[in-house]
Amino acid sequence: MFSEKRPIMSNDSIARIGVFDSGVGGLSVLRAIWQTIPELPVIYLADQAHVPYGPRPLEEVRLFAEAISRYLISQGCKIIVVACNAASAAALHHLRAQFPATPIVGMEPAVKPAAEHTLSGVVGVLATPATFQGELYASVVERFASNVRLIPHTCPGLVQQIEAGELDSPETYRILSEALEPMLLAKIDTIVLGCTHYPFVIPAIQKIAGADVRVIDPAPAVAKQTRRQLLARGLLTGDISSQQFPNPANRTQFITTGEAERFRSALRQLLDVDAVPIQLRWNQNSLD
Ligand code: DGL
Image 1 (tube, helix red, strand yellow):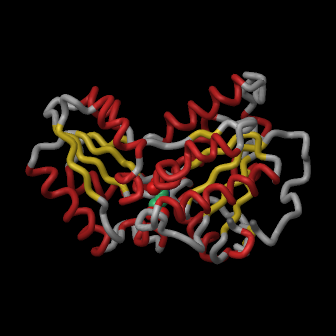
Image 2 (cartoon, helix red, strand yellow):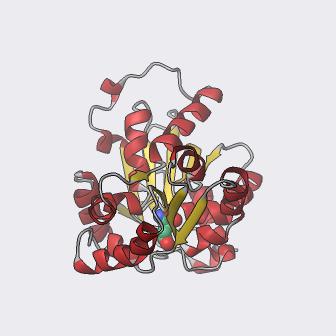
Image 3 (cartoon, rainbow, N blue to C red):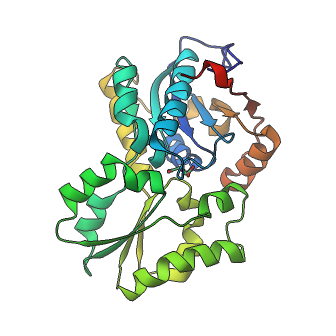
């Protein structure tokens, strides 16, 4: 567990949404949650002490995800959004079994809408190794991709580039070109973003692939699913009152297990918000 245990937001009667990722990727989901669920405060936790998750064994990512979820629930979160494909692949079923009273919303690669949309019948999928190894990916491929050709790529190093704020550096273009060029030769017309970091490089992807290739970011669908779950559990009245929190950053507590100042710069760059994140330390001994 974490060494910091005190509640970080004051009003304990309000339901909170807990959102986590290995780092800044889940901010692409947070953006959509801000738009879709303007009524509730959010706690966003970036596990930057362990980023990237993608190359790690699924068992290890599962332990991180469980400890983070337990922490967020202890802080008053009534729903958990696993804003990370790798952690969803590693831990979604496990988290639902461990925390049956808390709805857990996860990510899966958007193969279904891609298969419905593609005209060429060829779809590129960008995700990390953990996501490709997980059962969720195998299951969406089996259910929805029988009539399309999927071309997967893990984009090694891309998550680290995005963590470093290198959204359009030569190295970022090199990684993306290496992934996309064979896909373009194979006539993809759709790209699925199976990692929540990747929406932050959509402009670079579109520059390489061309504006005609459709890029699917699942964040809006995940935010809608989160809203549906909240409504089903009676945690939202259904009245949208965006006036309640005119500035969404003011209703969000940011936490990182990495460096607070670095995370603060990322928040400025990626979300255009100035917030002061809290830094939490992992205590290795208490994770089991
Ligand atoms: N943003 C995450 C995902 O959606 C994790 C990437 C990583 O840490 O490797 O998979």
